[in-house]
Length: 595
Ligand SMILES: [Zn+2]
Image (cartoon, rainbow, N blue to C red; front, side, top):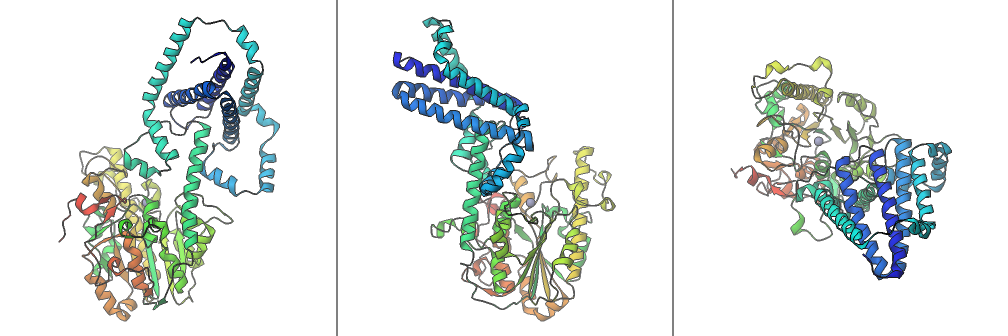
């Protein structure tokens, strides 16, 4: 592009900018491994830089002053972000991340100064940070002596310029095509602020070089932190707004056991041929436990499933609710209502813990649990350490529970059967062996995974039985609900959760075991309620409506309670569509017609 002598100087500056930014980008790609495949990152760099160059060249012609300011701003931002990112990588073995940004935003000036003086030392210049500084100094020199440099460069013929220009455009087009998937993904994720699931709902993206540059890592981190803040602020704004009219404390002691990744077909309670849940079967045979036939989780992802289980929002509410109540976080959390009503709320989790002295959320998933204000609004006490095995939660219970509290609500949240199945149970529980599975379609390694899953289920049953025994002599009711199911070689040789809508993939991931146990005292004192529970066992249910059932069991009166979502209410709407992943009707998808 050439539009007159007055812009040649600007063009020279733009080409210097291009050269040094390309060098900076290549350096970050090569020397900060682990943030995208280099083979995909380099074309993505070419694509991004090419777009920037076109903008600058046009600005050179149309508004040289603006072009100058733009270049200066880009220099400052790109070098500053790269320096911080590389320094983090050298010092902390991690580049800029959402947690890092959140910590930085929460850090006061004095704390920041102390951190900077302890981390930024002259020795840092001897690391990779020194190379970025060196490149920056060379860049400054090239800009200062640009005219002299241009004089020394050989003059190119107009034919060479044309061929070079054509080659550059061809390379840019090729790189753009090659990294198209990455660019579209980034557009939705960073520009449109979609979360990972929303992006995957548009298309099954598989970007290989997502946040390959420091500036993209910063953009992604800022967008994540922004989203988290929106969620947290909406929830915090709602604290205290949810009214509790009165509470009958119908069930003085309520225990909610939240399992992890439980495939219903792998429980003997639901007819599995291996004895994975002998204790639950025995409880059912004794008439202490009511097994529900048709329950699905709203999500097959822990975080979202948890949010929908805690919020009084029900999937599919959107069209009939006023604009200000569109998201799960615009509704009260039932745990807050229970605490305000007077229950002593104990939250014992082997996944989400509030570490001692921690003032910020450690994970995106637990923002609504770990924000100090939200945690305080929902729970009376919590554990602050995870355990290798879920049995450790029983010690937490003994330490943290208040035996004198007249009304208690206790949540046990297991690590259960989460991905690394073999790590979920002690060696002594290695009961099922690969040889127990006469399946010719599975390899020895796959059978090992299958056996480990069943062993983890059996150990989970043991933990559940121990917890139930803690409450046998109280006026207590216990509910068991996993956050979602799991694919575990049910219909082929694959395992693990995915986002497929194939019925054979959906069923094992969403169809979950769900049961209610009651102590002898409870069954005697609340005979009518127990009868009602038994009669509801064949009703269709989904985990997003769990809070309304719990409000019924507590006898808690609030304007947010909806009988149509309460499994035990005579007005329960069994045929309300069960929307999964906030997108599709489960029953229509798996062809489960109304009975
Ligand atoms: Zn989960």
